[in-house]
Each structure stands twice: as structure tokens, then as C-alpha cells.
Length: 242
Image (cartoon, rainbow, N blue to C red; front, side):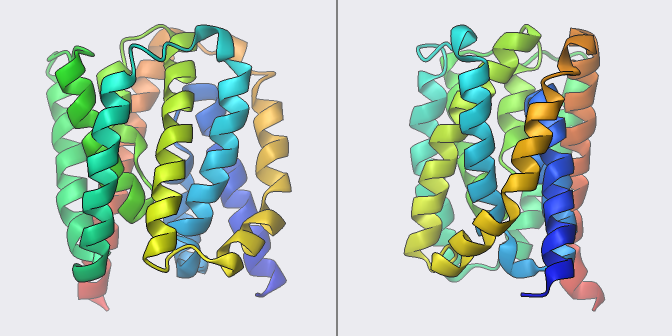
């Protein structure tokens, strides 16, 4: 592996970790498209592993605000979503799935901007978890469905609940990716080489998050969801342009 490629990927993941540690999610949205350009083999395996480490750090940081009971429906929905994604990755190209995912995310953002509130009911959380499992396992971008449902939560609770959900979801995704050959010892080794930079950036982000208002976070979530949808569409259409 070329050293410059590792540096570029580490910087992309550092930027993504800074965003996620201050907003609550967004690491893969920021990093995955950039990393895919430099080293496609890092997506989704290496990105997902770094996401797991980041989620563990964030979960510890916000441990006093975690509500396991409130997120149980999302955990349950994540399991079949991951299983379906693992099956899909054996038979269908991720580019085709990315088109559907991207369109769905952009539609959800549009509905949110139309003042339609996604209430965090058990049913909504279940479907958000299912969709997140589908997206996260196939593209490493699994945050938007959960973020849209939880966007009106208080900032600390939003970060805490998303962190604990991401720990659970990343573990499931890595199991599915390992079983389909998309996460191996090589991916693990490359992730360890990259990891120090994202971790240091995460610790830096904690020093500035107190200056960020709750309403800013909601708008940031919608912007990041839009970016996620556009990135997924780009990933789906790019093979057609080459």
C-alpha cells in the first residue's frame, strides 16, 4: 500500500470523525466518497472498522445520556437489514443499490424540510434501523435514516443514542462483511495503520462541541443527509460514465 494513499485516507477519516463527534453522525458520509476515490478496497470494510472505534469512544463520552430502551426497536430492525444487505452483496452490485439508497435519502430530507416530523416511535425506529443496516453494510453510510428520525432530540441525547446504535450496527456489518469476504485480515491491518489520526481528531472535537447549538445540529444533519444521498447516487452512476 502506497504511503501517500494511507495519508489521504487518514485525513479523510479524520475530517469525518471530527464531524461525527460534534454533530452525532457523518463520518462515513464525509470520508467514504473520498476514500473510494483513492482506495476502493477500503470501502466499506476499513471505513466501518474505524466507525466502530469512533462509536465506542463517543458512547463512552456520552454514556450518561444513553437510552437503551428507547433504541431497542432500532436494534431489532438493524439485524434483518444487515442480513438482507449481506445477501444482496452476494448477487447485486453495490452501484445499483446505491441508486435506490441515494434517492431514498434525498426523499427523506425533502419530507423533513416540508415540516413533516419523523416521530421516534418504535415502528419508525425499526424501519430506520432496517434501512440503516441495508445502507451501512453495503456502502458504509448508515447514519441518515437514524439521524432523520432522531433529529429533534436534544443534542447530547442525539449524540449518545446514535453512538450506541453505531457500535451495535458496525459490529453486525463487520460480521456480514467478513462472511462475504469484504473484511479480512488485510483490511484490519490497514485500518490499524490509519486509526491514530482519526482518534486524535475525535479527542480534539470534544473541545469545540460546546460551542455548537442544537438548531445548528439539526440543519447540519439535513445537509449531511443530502450529501449522503448525492454521494450514493454518484457511486451508482459513476460506472455508467466511465
